[in-house]
Amino acid sequence: MSETEILETHLQELRRGTIVLACLRLLEAPGYGYGLLEQLGERGFPTDANTLYPLLRRLEKQGCLTSEWNTDEARPRKFYRTSAAGTRLAATLTDEFRAIATAIGTLPEEN
Picture (cartoon, rainbow, N blue to C red):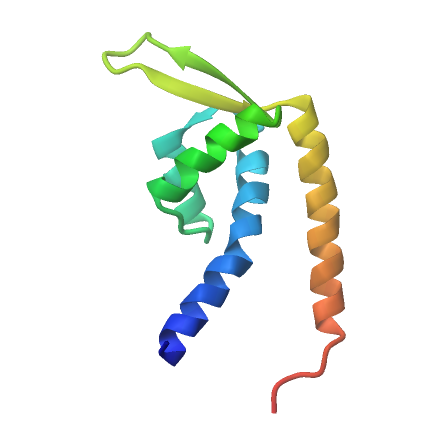
């Protein structure tokens, strides 16, 4: 495995949990999959559809998101929204993320 491939693997692992947190926070306002993909990318969380849609289904199954179909437009869209349980989870994850960032700040810098 090349150094680049190793780096990409570790970056993907690092980002995985942050995508969950970003989705929960962004979906405090209702949103649909493609729009959420765009919002994530604009905010520095590049994600592909093959990652996002299974994540949304999993979070919904866990009770962290609710969903509703909007059929007002020509193309029906499934809108997701963070549930009360998802809001509590997002708050806990945010606190934990900040604690981890603080802890990382105490580690020695690169030379």
